[in-house]
Amino acid sequence: MATREETRQVMAGSVPIGGGAPISVQSMTTADTRDADAAIKQIRQLAAVGCEIVRVAVPDEEAADSLRSIRKASSVPLVADIHFNYKLALASIEAGVDKLRINPGNIGGADRVREVAHAAADRGIPIRIGVNAGSLPADLVSKYGRTPEAMVEAALRHVSLLEREGFESIVLSLKASDVKRTTEAYRLIARRAPYPLHVGITEAGPPPGGLIKSAIGIGMVLSEELGDTIRVSLTGDPRDEVIAGREILASLGMRRFGPTIVSCPTCGRCRTDLAGIVREVKDGLSHLDAPLVVAIMGCEVNGPGEASEADVGLACGNGVGLIFSGGRVVRKVREAEMVGALVEAAESMAANRHEKSHG
Image 1: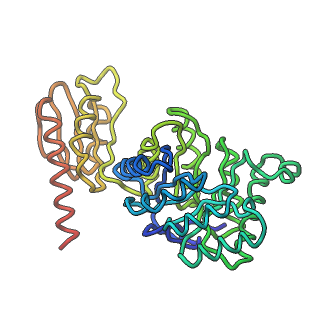
Image 2 (image 1 turned 120 degrees about the horizontal axis):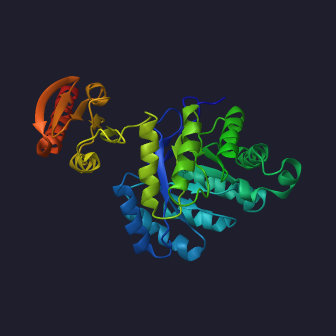
Image 3 (image 1 turned 120 degrees about the vertical axis):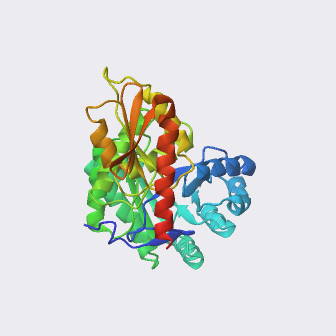
């Protein structure tokens, strides 16, 4: 089985995918690509919340014509999503995109595949082959049903077309709208192909169900050391996809994006507005990028233990709280001082770590 460390590495612009590179978070614009200003605005919004690769739909020549200005304005690598029309793939490459999402078996004969593969190779652009359970070839559905086995065979067909042209800068995705089929498909393809994997649950739906389904499915695949880049596919604001993807990676300990807050769900023992404190602390720490663990606990049952295990923590009591830093109590504060004191402790630890790491 090809784990993350063993897959080949490709580059989407400046972002490495596979070969042990950090798992990147992707999303896709919902703006009409033909409206370059709208697409650029949305890409900037996605980048602002941490999106590292952005995909745009390219349904026609007008959309392809917009790509050059979109790419010029984008601070993150741009992926052109193409279906059926190889000329749109060539136009996208010419416009300077950083990656293609196209299935070579759907664009015509070998000459068309060859033309796209050679153009991509000349520009150093990888191609993602994306197989969805809902759009499998009829012969494979007849043979296997809409199963993980059919998804893998479909992906390998597309792969073989590119490999015949000597093109191996490939990323694979095999997605279904349910967790079990998706996770099994990734397990199977990892045994048969050395290419990096883009992981997600397709058509997951709106939050909260889509978030839960995606977190379980993506989390299962990543926990088996498979997967090199992810997208949480939600019906709604694509910024929510990015935020969720980053949270999934942070929860698995695979990446850290600033402080991680650990807080209790509260119960009848809690005598403070813990939810309000958590919100204020989260806002107060939003400027930090240090990977701190910050515990905010509501009572004496688990509070001192959890707070002392974190980098910094707050254990609340009745109108008072203890501030922990590095496992030790450093202050006792009134309720009105809790947020400020905890943020200050976090900032101090972040500054100390930065100073140590930079000599």
